[in-house]
Length: 96
Image (cartoon, rainbow, N blue to C red; front, side):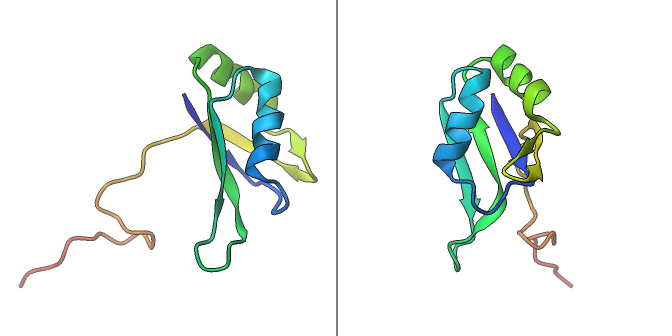
């Protein structure tokens, strides 16, 4: 199960996230998202756990918990909406 982890400190690395979430169970991967141009953390990331039970345990344990000075938001990751670009506008071209 893939988890969304938001409101992360800009100092938190993917390795930090992996280690922290390992307290709740087996972690397959952890990734902090970075800005493509600046390389700076965008303050959120994703953690993948093989078991739904462990993932739900991680949500219960870490959602709202302070980590590196910030209160984390942890929830089940949702798939990206299709048809929208990163500015929230529909990618379809209008025809007149």
